[in-house]
Length: 340
Image 1: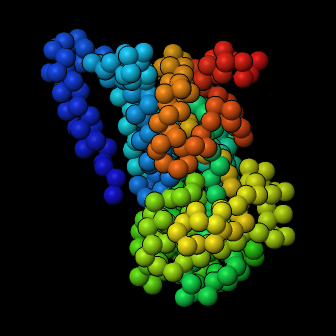
Image 2: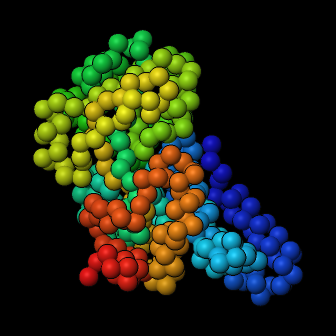
């Protein structure tokens, strides 16, 4: 379970007090500290550990050594924290409401929220959503126990399947996959479990399969592979051709052999992961955060952190973006010669 926001805020305040006591600069320096949250998903997925790495890289609390002296190269006075959540759908809503300063989201969810379409059909479009950066491709995982006999999406009929929480990014994509293969939620016994809980249920035999959208390897799924006999189910065939024609945010991709211990790889589909914020955050703050994200020292942290960190690259920072950049991020990319 992730740390609650109120408890987390208390921890951050304690950290700030500790910094002031150590540096001996009193209340003036304490007032310079700014807290910045990054909404993720469950702690067993990919968002949470990767956001932790990024939070470390953009943070630079008072008292830190200078960047050129081997210290933090983050934003002066900033303390960023990864905050667990239900995932993409809850993150975009919390960003707009002010509950989060920023958050990770699938590209499809970001577009639906901004345009008031898809899973946000009938809701007020979230026109103040803005992008800081595209991060990496997220793969649609369909995991089944070997004992279930599931070998294809069609085999899910009549089975016990977790589609994740209804405010996750996985949930709407899972429904689209089912629809493409001629199934609906009425054809299966639906569970709404976070990845770590779904993995535990599959391991004990109370669940037959689970959907998860995220970068591989996800911690919860890697742990599941070590405790239960599972397979990755392919999401491929003419049904996927139709999905790609109707939903351009999907791409064909693959999860390779060995991404999870002793589990064969499969062909599947993927969407992009993006880091979002809202328009009202100051241009200078987001400019400094974007610059810190792409600082060479951050590259070093990404390469030694979660395995998906290696896929986070400035070269791909503008890939698949279908909603506007934040003015601060846009300023950085313009100065870097990435946009005109």
